[in-house]
Image (cartoon, rainbow, N blue to C red; front, side, top):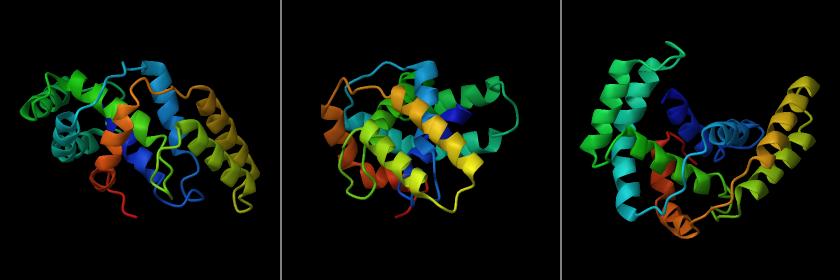
Length: 181
């Protein structure tokens, strides 16, 4: 769950200049590749409930970051209770909605705020990292390796209608992540 809140914040880190945040998507792609949540057709109600719950979820997971590699059962129970409070069947359902929102967000160009696909966003970030003269060569090499690995792990969207729903709430999602533009 801690990785979930970190992934959410990192998705919107792409709103910041890419030279500052060299590799937000590789972390996400690795998380998505490892866990591969099911893709679902999102609804307005799910995204609205997600937005309502995210503040409480993030506050709770922030307290736990770095505390332990293993999820605390008490925190998991509190997260599940928050999810249910906002009409999710469980924390698992909340996480699936989070992951599906993330699949769309990963493919939104931060400058145009239009969906172009996660592969295009990653390729643009790769090009910017390659051209970044201020980045240490070892850091650049590591970032590029991670980003190229993430590029191979990009999942195609099974539900293109999710794009319109997420774009409709994009500014609110960015605000919920703590990012400003």
